[in-house]
Every structure is written in structure tokens, then in C-alpha cells.
Length: 142
Image (tube, rainbow, N blue to C red; front, side, top):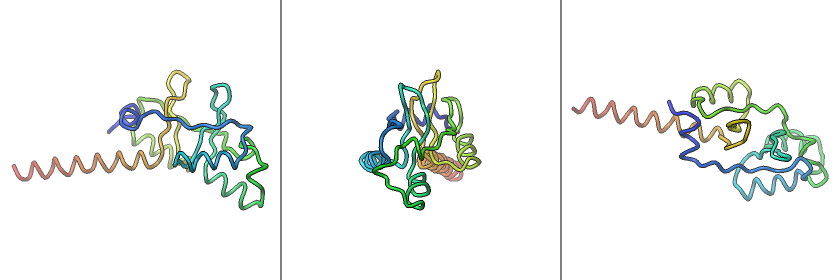
């Protein structure tokens, strides 16, 4: 099973973030530009929370609020679950499932070095299953 470190080597360590004072509208615009579903909310290099499309849908649209006037800090999720480089894909999937989240910031020495999405983990599982199938087919044919 692959580790977070191996996933980040293949994916890269791009981290998209927004300040807590930014408007929700600006955060959504950045998510659209970066083609991502969530942004880390950071201030002075410190992780304060995560804002996701889900936060927007549930805390802005459904409550009839304006994304232009609302600050990111007002709707962000601040109970952020993070992982380290040594954790496995299975461990990350279990964390995402039990916490009902779709993004995991990756920390090393207290510093953000990447973010994994549920899509990254599903892709890794599929690749591993394909390798296992290929190995079994090779074994059967030999």
C-alpha cells in the first residue's frame, strides 16, 4: 500500500490557500481557476481551516447569504484533520470516511507540504488493483 509521501511524489505538492478575511466569492473564484474543490485557510503560514464547495452550498446558498459579503472565516471548517507522510492510503481513506471529509492537508514538521483529495486516494487504489490484476494474469499465463 502506498504512503502519503509516495502519493505526493507523483502528484506534486501544490497547495492552494486563501486568507480568512477573503470573501467567499473570491475563494470560489480561486477554486474554479485552480479546478479544485477546497482551499486551505491560512494566515501567517498557519493552517486555520478549510473552505470547500460543500461549505459554500450548506452555509451560504441554503441560508440565503451573499458570497460577496461573507468572509471565508465565517463558513470555513476549522476542525481540520491532517495526515503525515508515513500514513498509508488505507489510513487516509479511513480518516476521510469516518470524518466525512474529502480533503486531507499533509503536514511535515508542523508545515503544510501538500493536500490529498478523495480522488487522489481512489486513483491510488485503482492503480494498485490494476497492478495486482496484472501480476495475477502474468502468474496464470506463466
